[in-house]
Image (cartoon, rainbow, N blue to C red; front, top):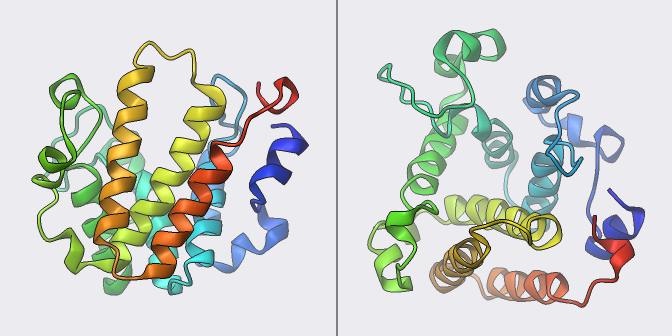
Length: 215
């Protein structure tokens, strides 16, 4: 990733910025070691940048630890069925026993998984309005820490989409998907400062980019 891009978004990268102070950071860092996207962006950047957003939103450590662990369980059905998942049950057990995670972290983690998976970018949701999407996110407004975790996730993914995936065949639908999510999250956030934070981050993302700032 170009240094100019790092500077533009003022994001924190790697253990040198204190990421390993979080209990479960080394677990995901070890799992993602050497893994990167087709554009050469390390997978761990999603976690690092998400942590930075959550720190800016001043959430508690248990929420950040839940965010750190979310790639392990986001598509895992704990009843025993797996489809299109990052890990099988046996592979998951090599890294962490999900049933031994502290209750307060597990609670945040599973709530995040529930709502993150409730509205995904699929052909069946391509024509959703904000109202349609919100219908799948009932009661999310009652869980403001989950809202913040989703904000961190969507801001980070949207930023990477704008920088690196403008050649994606579903570009139009992905742009719409992220826009709908962030509008919903801003609307249901109980904090004016969080709504302002989303607006500022989106404004930064939409600044004109030079060729040197894009891969």
